[in-house]
Length: 372
Ligand SMILES: [Zn+2]
Ligand SMILES: [Zn+2]
Image (spheres, rainbow, N blue to C red):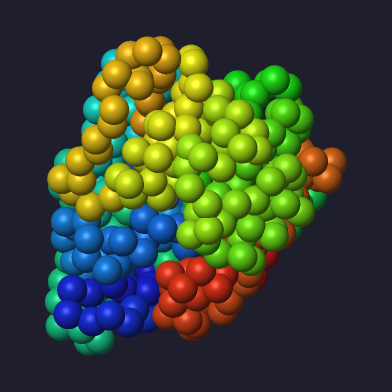
């Protein structure tokens, strides 16, 4: 079987949409016809070459689509099911068995390296088009920048039919990351003063999730005025331009020291200012990625004197099988309006969508690939 995929190459800044060829489906795999897929920041940094992945590769890891075919060992899905794809995990290691697949011992090879865990790939390039053979796929167990995706039974989440399928893909990565950090880790409550540094998809999802608990202060920090305005509409009590404010001075003047903070920037100077803005027993969650080898520095005595916790979190520590249907339910009740951050593009406009993501013009681009 042949289908079209957007291929990221090492010598080209544009994606090449080309035919690829599908090999045999394995017993634990699910073939999904992709209806739409989000573009996440991890796709951008991999496309731009900041992560050592083998190219050419089919990126994309916020796919939503319809089950086309299932392997013999896939019991809980059937062709025609609407599904959302999420991160992959091995299902066998001690963390997977302890219901923590987001810390799977094989997270990096299962999600980033572009191969199945045994090193094989289901997809080859059409020799007539490119002259190459094997192509890296299985990115986050999906490679959803394509008309079809070979997913693993571990990362396919069934979703209801009564919600538009084309908007659901980002629930599987960026949105569950932000919401999960609040619900699963911080457990934000009414007395909390929570600040979120960087309000792209992950930060705005954290704001929508935290708003439900009505914390005393919910502060968005971002230099982009459009994002700050949206953060206020989605539930932030304050929005601060970090180019115009000093931290912790702004918090001392307006809010008091923070009880909770989330960093989505991965910027060491920002993280340092957040640590200094935390009060006693404050917790900082690190969600932002940075270049390999990036180091953080803090004032140790400020941390020791205040019992501060700094924790890194993957995928919001979300049990996707519960989290994604829960987010859909809240959306349908008007409690989690994540449609406000989405903007749709045709598959052929993937380069425009990526550029709009990188410039901040679009918060969450979604590529429409197939019919729902
Ligand atoms: Zn992602
Ligand atoms: Zn595992």
